[in-house]
Image (cartoon, rainbow, N blue to C red; front, side):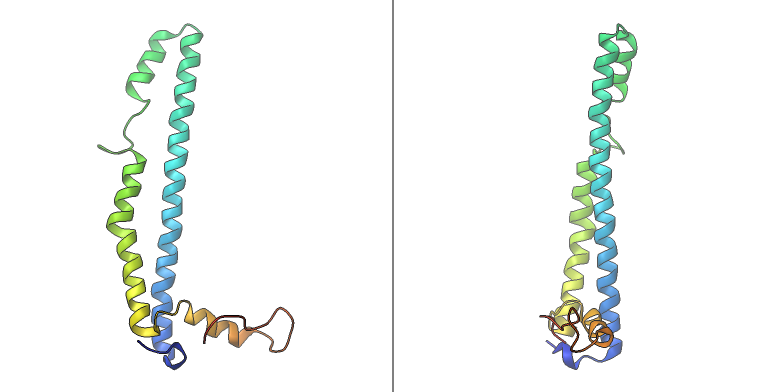
Length: 137
C-alpha cells in the first residue's frame, strides 16, 4: 500500500480517472433503476387503464391489451429487475471491485486523492468554510 501523500501526480490522475469512470457507471446504474421503476409504473398504469376499458364495456380491446402487453418482457425473456440484476452481477460489481483494487494498490485505499489535492489547491487557507476538514492528503 502507498501513502496517498507520496503518490506522484500521474498516478493520482490515473486513479482519479478510474474512479471518475466508476462514478459515471454509478450514474448509469441509477438511470437503469429509473428505467426499472418507470417501466414497472407504466405496466401498473396500463393494467388500470385496461380495467377501465373493461368497465366501460370494451372487453375485446381490454382482453387484447391484457394478453399482449400487460406483464410483457421488456427484452427477450427479461423484465427490468432481471436486467438490473444481471448488470449488477456482471458489470457493476466487477467495476467497483476493480476500482477498489486500484486504490488499494496505489493510494493505500484512500478515495478521491485527486479531489483532495484539488481542494487543498483551491481553498482559501484560514477562511471560514474553506477548512481542510477530515480529508487526507
